[in-house]
Image (cartoon, rainbow, N blue to C red; front, side):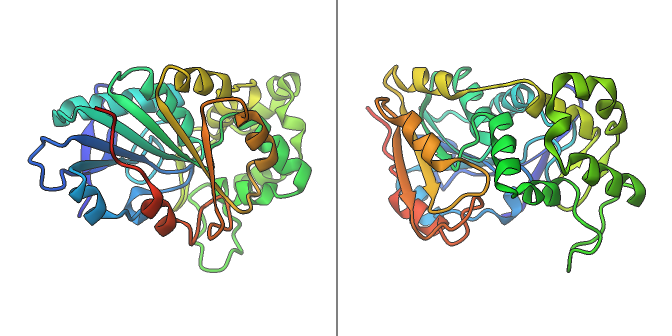
Length: 292
C-alpha cells in the first residue's frame, strides 16, 4: 500500500500510510506504528492478516525529518502531528494501541497523554532517556552506529553521500566522536554554532543538526517515571527487547521495570537495537484485544 502525504496546520508535509483493515473506518482498535530514529514506514512490514482478523486498523506515520515528512524532529510536535493526522482521517476506533520503536517511545507516551483511548503502549527497544543512551554508547565505544545514522561516512559501501557538504560532514563527525560536546557549557560556547547546519541522507533530513542534538541530548530527559505512572493507571505498557543492544543498557532498563506494572519481554531472535529477525516473533506474540 502506497504512502500518502498530509499537510499539518503549520504547513509541513507529513508522510503516512493508513489501512482500515476492511473495517470501513469502524475499527475496534487502531494500531499506530512509529518508526525508530532514522527509520521509515516504507520498509516496516506488519502482520496484516492478524490485525484485520482482530478488526484493527493500522496507521503508520513518519515523524518529522523522516521519509518525506518535513520539519525539525521534536517529540512533542511529532505527538501533536499524530493527533492532527488522526483527527484529519476521522478515525473512530474505540481504542488505540501504539507500537513505537526506539526514541519514538517518547512520542508514543506524549501522545498517550493526549488521547484517553490509548490502552496499550508496545515499546520496542525503547530509548526513554536520550542523553543516557548516548553516554552509554560513548562508554561502550559504539557511538559510530549513531554517527552513521546521522552523518553517513563517504566511504560506506552502497551508501550515497549525504547532501551535507563533505567538509562539514567530516568536521561534524569529528566533533561528535567524543562526548565533550554534551556538556551544556561546552555546547553553548561553540559546538552549537559549529553544528548549526542542515543534513539530508537516506535515513534522516534535519534543517539543523544543532537543534536536533540540543533537543534530545543536552538536557537530561528521563521519561521512565512518566511511563511508569501512566501504566499505573491501569493502562498496559509492554517493553520488547532484543537479545543484544548497543544503544540501550538492557540490564539497567530491566532493573528499572522491576516493581512496576510494566511487562518486559525479550525476543532472542532479535539481535540488535533495530530488531532484525525479531519482527515476526513480535507480531506473533502481540496481544491485540483491548479491554471491554
